[in-house]
Image (cartoon, rainbow, N blue to C red; front, side, top):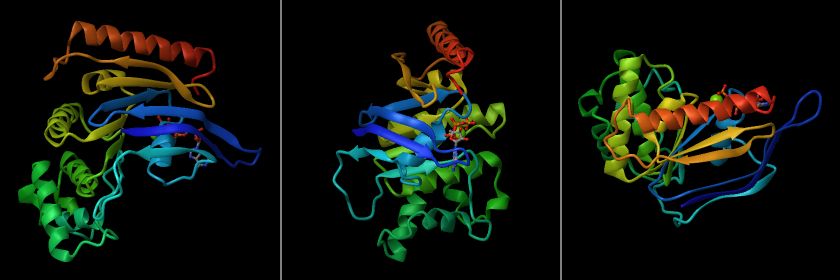
Amino acid sequence: MIRISDMTLAFAGDRGPTTVLKDFSLTIDKGEFVAVVGASGVGKSTLLRVIAGLVRAQSGTVDTDQPPTPGRRPYALVFQDARLLPWRRVVRNVEFGLEGLGLDAGAKRRRALDVLALVGLADKADRWPHQLSGGQRQRVAIARALAVDPDLLMMDEPFGALDAITRQTLQDELVDLWQRTGKTILFVTHDIDEAVYLADRVVLLAGSPAGVRSEDCIALPRPRLRDHAEARATAAAIRTRLSDYVEQGAGI
Ligand SMILES: Nc1ncnc2c1ncn2[C@@H]1O[C@H](COP(=O)(O)OP(=O)(O)OP(=O)(O)O)[C@@H](O)[C@H]1O
Ligand SMILES: [Mg+2]
């Protein structure tokens, strides 16, 4: 279980600090797939960056009930672009994520090849990033995140830059991966249909500073249909709520 408690985060600015998150709390069960949606600029990426320790909150805590384990990291983050190092082959890009964990070269290589197999890229380990498609590069980024065996895998609009067909393929692969690994996932998207298709629970962020305005449990069986009436109705309800918040001037 991951528990974010009473998180407050403000960025310094020319005209004083801007508070993005205030007294923000969210609990995610082990193995749960949670999607976060909200207007542009509301604080979705900031939330993930705080959890990942890339920015420091003024107050609040992020806890996992897993004991710290050598060779692992509690949190891993996948971005919209794969952010691969062009001068490293695919397998070496995945190994890059393992630096500082105290693993020897052989252990790193085994770990990297295992996660590349998980994302279906075992045969691309020796390629250079420029020899991959956009979807394959994003799979490498997912492999690099999984390599540290995180308690929480966080994804920030990971499929936002892909074409519609590749996006659907990767969505289905992600659900499959999640079911096979039992990982806990926190997935940010501005695409409410994507959130409802993928997640067990959809959290709507709105307001300035941002807070959780609603949570919808998506109890539909898997594998899911892309055009399920109940899913469509839930997505429409979330969309209406979101635009109400934006109209009130509270969304951005
Ligand atoms: N390093 C920073 N310094 C100052 N302000 C920042 C910084 N990073 C983000 N912000 C501000 O914090 C707010 C939230 O930004 P964030 O990137 O989290 O939004 P978002 O919900 O991810 O938006 P989008 O959907 O467009 O990606 C915005 O107002 C943004 O301008
Ligand atoms: Mg963002």
